[in-house]
Amino acid sequence: MSAKRAIVIGAGVGGLTAAMKLAHAGLEVDLYEKQPGPGGRCGRVEFDGFRFDLGPTILLMPHVLEATFASVGRRMSDVLEMQRCDPHYRVHYRDGSRFTLWTDPKQMKAELERIEPGSHARYEQFLAHGKKQHDTAFERFVTKHFPTLGSFLTPRNLPEILRVGALKKLWKHVASYFKDERLLQALSFQTMYLGISPWEAPAVFSLLPYTEATHGIWFPKGGLYAVPLALEKVCREKGVRLHYSQSIKRVVVEGGVAIGVELADGSVRKADIVLSNADYAYGVKQLLPESLAAKRSASVEKKRFTSSGLMLYLGLKKKIDPLLHHNVFFGRDFEGSFDDIFERKQVPADVSFYVNAPAHTGEGFAPEGKDALYVLVPVPHQNPNVDWKIEGPRVRAQVLKRLVEEGYGDLEPLIEAERMITPDDWETELNLARGSNFGLAQNFWQIGPFRPQVTDPDVKNLFWCGASIQPGTGVPTVMLSAGFAVDAILAQLGATAPVPQRMEALA
Image 1 (cartoon, rainbow, N blue to C red):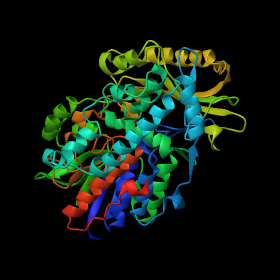
Image 2 (tube, one colour; image 1 turned 30 degrees about the vertical axis):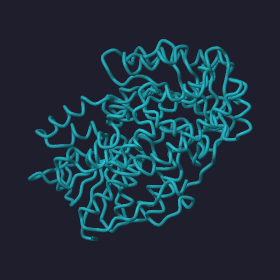
Image 3 (cartoon, one colour; image 1 turned 45 degrees about the vertical axis):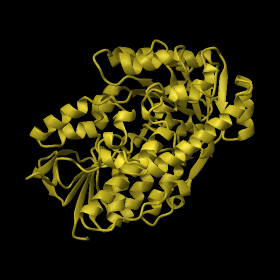
Image 4 (cartoon, helix red, strand yellow; image 1 turned 90 degrees about the vertical axis):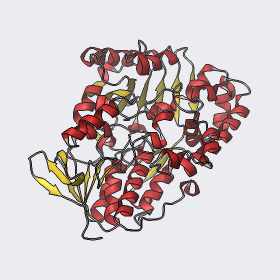
């Protein structure tokens, strides 16, 4: 095994996880990354003394991270310090009302009854159903790789697919428990973590609010960027050779077999295995041989992509104390805004957005007495309907105006450092096709066997992992994707893959 060499493309969470696992299994591993450091879309933005997570700021399912580090003989607590957020976040509605979601059951009961009397009992039923969905989904689907449709639609799985609500829509499911529109919104918008609409998302994703309520929302010390840093640390300890600021031009394929990669400077690095953590839609178009790339890219282009995000990173002269760590602001037309983003491919007239204030919880994000606000505005991915040179400033002005209206004050004169990222930037800086933050959407026809698998169907010894690969987008699921890829690689090499840990037992 020690003679076998693997090359990993991309130092996102998936690439780092895969490199760590492959090195632990005894392979010689080289990891190449376009950016000067690790993280990919889970990276960091730092300027003028302020620090922000680039993309993800909400971490769910810490048991997946625990199992991932345990699979290479490490305890998560040795490399990553975690803090639970309670309350989770405060939701702001256009009618001036607010709703705060808590882990604390007494606080949550009071909030629910204040919004909709009698709703707490139905919330308990909602969570009980969410637990069944979570446990079944993790045992049967999320932690399993499906190389074929037949492996998914087995007699044992078919009733479970129906039971978890894979064919029912999330919004309709939530509406069967609650009447007040504000509760429906607060308990369904979590699908935006996946870049999809609650009217399109399968009802199984009610496991997200269940997971928040029971397993909690977590904040790693140092922000979400601490996760790739922890993975990088273990990679180095395992002997992975990390090559930053080195772009891959293409995967070298001879006779239908991947034999290495060509770097941007034209040099070739040979390997027995190539594993790509590049964005899948970008990868099949840019990294595969030209004749194959055209066919595969045309197929991927027909798939449904997730939304994108317009990002504002604001360094403020003083702290905005009333903000929580996580804050959500809904626009006037909740359903219409999703139709704008996903169907009409335009920016909503009255945007919804999320504000993360990490300096209210952790250190190092802003100078003493100052604040670092991360603003994410869900917007459509790149398309001819939107000119971000026009829409970017308009959305920025709307966000600042809304914060004034909500009582957080006029932030404009407090801004001393600022950066904006649009879908165009996601496409150019991180090679994300269409500037789509979350990759391919996760509707029913793009999950399980309908989603790209870890083993390339055309090129031997080429493997994939990441947000667009099974099981799906999100930090924990991308780690699982990397695990699927490593298991497939070790099986092909004739090695014995580590026995997967039962995630539900670790919850």
